[in-house]
Image 1: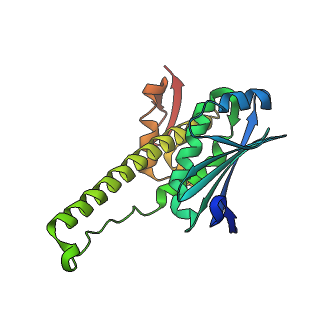
Image 2: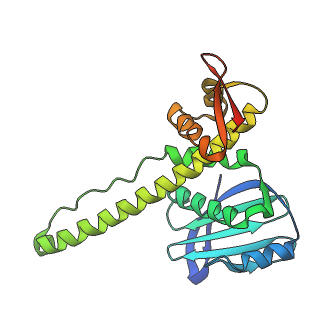
Length: 226
């Protein structure tokens, strides 16, 4: 995760940039990739050549995606610290990767540190505004509370979606460990800096993904295909 210097983008806005680089191998040609990305909503071609760059303008924020033969780079430009928008940037990147399907072989471990950082962020705190003068009437206050409640619901939805993506990615990391032999929750926690709740949530996906958990002994587990 790299925080860049302030620069100007469309409309003369001064923004700070943050990069999220992922290791990913392109399966196919750049031309085929461009044809597929043309169908992704609100994604606009920024530049093309040996790699493709696409932009998503979200008003206050600006997202730029670079697709190369061995990498995908997500960038977020924001007037405030782009770290505040890490969750949103990851959700957008995961959505693009899911849309591309088998076009890229993504190295799962390269995205995991960013997911860990995003999941550790403190939840956004919403405070009820205090009434002041005429603007503090019940009607104005009620409207503001409804607005804040809507924002809170949206944040919860995004958090749940990110949790689901995180659990699925952690499950695949655990699966790769299981392929080497029996594993323990402690070893997974130490290697990937994941807490027990996250590990249990990931393992709970096993049946839906076609795997069964085998208890080797008191601590060691193994995943086998159903």
